[in-house]
Image (tube, rainbow over all chains, first blue to last red; front, top):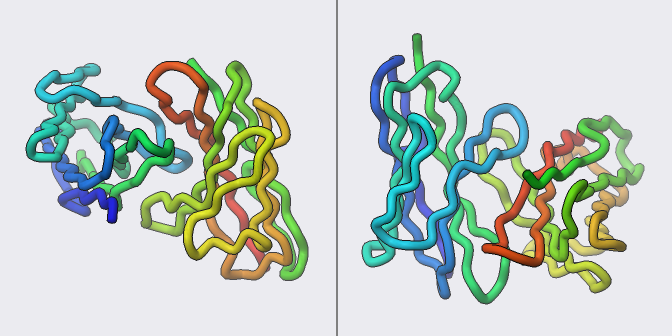
Length: 111
Length: 116
């Protein structure tokens, strides 16, 4: 059975801290892994990762995929209160197009 | 970038009535659309996958007669919650997928349904 597991489920940090969010997956015919940020409404896309070892970066956020160990991490440096959100990862298989979501990590950044 | 809209953004209805939610891809053709449901403080749960012009594929445990999905065109899919009950109250999100590239899904803003 396909599954995506995120850890930690909840994280509270202070502004300026660096956080690492984890996502492990077991998906048949894996194609890509995606990270989303969800605040009050629907998720917004952050990264799509298809190749191992290639870091994707956007500002203070970066992510990398390890297809051998079947996990991905999302790093946020110099966190700000605006980074407070639920971060979702999802694995996308080849044979069908629907994604399997992890439970999410709820990040709270305190001033 | 690709934009997906949902309408309405929130709706309150009485038990026993039906509610239709629209999902539109505004600037691209979506060969596949997905409907998700999200309970408070929980992750997204895929309800069904719909391909334009064909019947939707429902996930296990999702009642197809309760949640009617129609994907009538390459830019529009609708979800109708029939004979709604309070337990159907939830946040419903659609996503649309184009036919080229790496098949990334673009999410709509979601619809908050409250059944009283």
